[in-house]
Length: 238
Image (cartoon, rainbow, N blue to C red; front, side, top):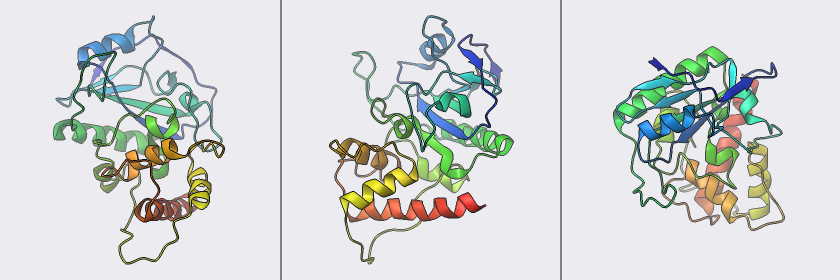
């Protein structure tokens, strides 16, 4: 691990670190991302950056508050930066400032380092599995990273985050939008009950149903959320 000291941080309030937030850089390459994350004019940073080749950089000490989440909310927590660790993962993303990027899968060597780094962070801070989230989860109105090609299922299989435990095949379930939105809020999403729910549904699908991110509620999407709610209720008791 290489250490680069970004100046973009401040002190935490003293609250316990609760979340681990995954991002993609959304820039042309890792060098540009590092430059931005360390530039005082940008006013953005993260605790770690993981390059495509697996090289890990620490930019901000974990005891300090990095500026990675921005305007975000999960459950009743609104200052996500204060109680989280942020990992930036080098990937050009869906688009960057007019640059025609082609969103691509994350290399295996990169994902292996992300998993190893995340496991250590989780163990140090006793972060519960359902509090390992994407930027698109906590800030779905603004962000879509790390995106639908990020292998959340593989992370979960290695103890990092959660994943639905089964398929809806053969299960009788009522597809109920009002219930889905209530359950989505229970899970943690900042649900706006007065507006078109498609963006919120898309955010959920982008993380937990990556083969279908059409923003439409169906049986499989409903079932996956209920599966995760059940897991969360068990994890909270642990």
